[in-house]
Image 1 (cartoon, protein in one colour):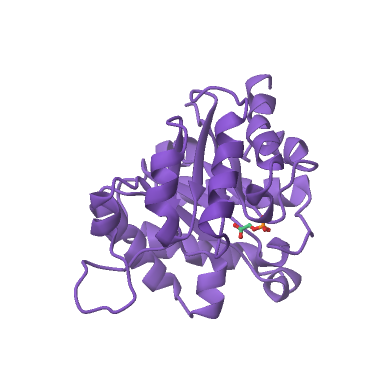
Image 2: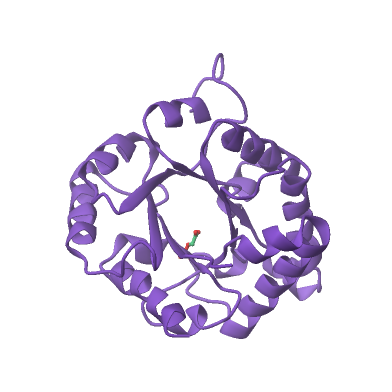
Length: 254
Ligand code: PGA
């Protein structure tokens, strides 16, 4: 079962409209493999979504960085999945560790959001990952399994879900997981899906790695059998994002 390589760019809370236009122009000029080799999705802040959607090349897609847990209404400051669908935004990132940690989003809350977003027709990049303390105490797989379980309990159809394994200690730190560390968790996650969801979902769901991915380390990571792509933060704002997209070629020749 083919898992098309997936590269997401998480722009986080960065950019002015001028800077965003520059990034889009760089992406539009980039020479990258075709869509059957790599799926590319970039995620600007909410306010820039229409601008990016309008100016971005048609073989790349856009994602929001979050959405509200249910239908809109009296929830000041929130953006609902329905609104993203209305604007033609196909993807959303949910459960990013910055939101889990800073805004206190629980596993259950993230699971509810994933289920609601999917029910409205959005595709979801669902993030999981352990902190340094959790890794050092040997609980990485327990943490990642609990985060995934909260999603699995609420979601039946996994065809529009990409799981992003993002160890918190590797995000924005320049301290990338080694290819072996990434592969180990990805393989365990796939085993977890096989045991707790189904063999088919385990075989077909893309598990992508995030945390200090760069032009320099992406090829080696992409060479791991269970690494199906990346969620890229800092480097997705730079021209090297094109090189990271090209890492998909490692899979093609594997
Ligand atoms: P980073 O961020 O690539 O800057 O480490 C990754 C992420 O938070 O998705």
